[in-house]
Image (cartoon, rainbow, N blue to C red; front, top):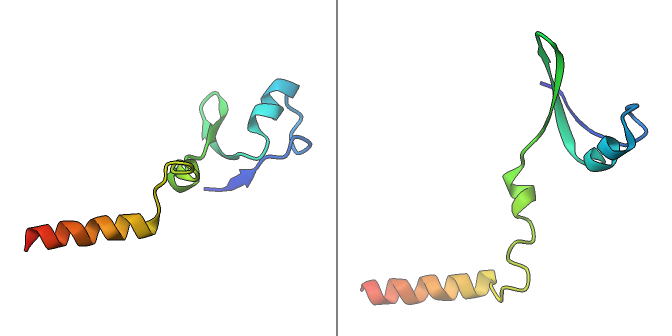
Length: 73
């Protein structure tokens, strides 16, 4: 299955569609009626930045894990 990153000048799409797809990865599927264009879901990319400004870091995570392990002993 081929995946492409859409640039607005790559496909002659209506301006609103081209703007909403620009920079996104899409897949083309052959169906009976023609082609289906579907966005590629990338959970890692979608999660990027979700903890920003949440005062959560790997250091605090590992400190919490050490505290939990100490409590289990």
